[in-house]
Length: 279
Image 1: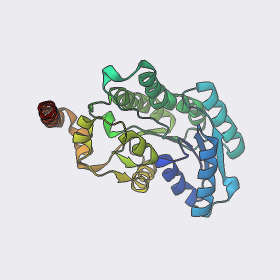
Image 2: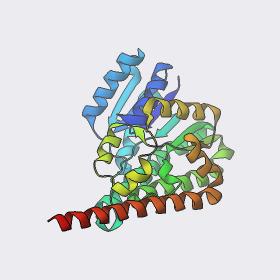
Image 3: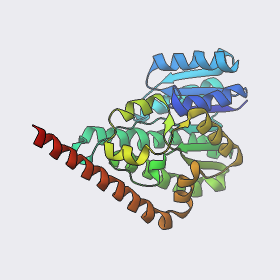
């Protein structure tokens, strides 16, 4: 029976991916920081997919702490057998202009989004190599393809994932281990709602023109890519063009971003001037 381990599996994209595999009869292990959310996710999966509760394992661990996530994955493998598919969905986004973003927030995003993925991969990689099979899907972001105003830490962490995935793919392929990376757009998740509350207006001017994808739709494409063994998965025409033709497309998008931000800044300055004259 297939064993799927999902970090960040208590909500959002991770939970939606878990729902797909639980519905197919796989053994699913969910890892996240909050045990309460994990228990809710476990109950939801059992109710919505018909999966038996004992086929869904939960482990509370912080992926930024390598010993914790390694121990959690080890317990999952002891209970359900070796990991066949690893999906690294754990992530955090804390928008803010670089000069306003404190060092702790910047470092936290790097540790969870990038190092957290590395820690989970390291915990399953040797076993997959020995067995000569296994699939690893890293969830990056559209922000891992192009820089976004107010997202310096998040973009850095997601760009780093792409480089890690590219390098590891070459090392893993001769051993029968598949490595993939995907670049979802804004997705309808609890995290997006928290993110929007602190997203700079300049970023909203750029990102708000695209409607967020439903988590189920993103998860369906991720699962399909794992099955087909695709290395890179993009969502929507813009991200596909960035992924496939980045050097040619990026200057045009940079021009559009700069123009939109400049217009927003001009408008904001005008509004401040009107307000000052009225007072």
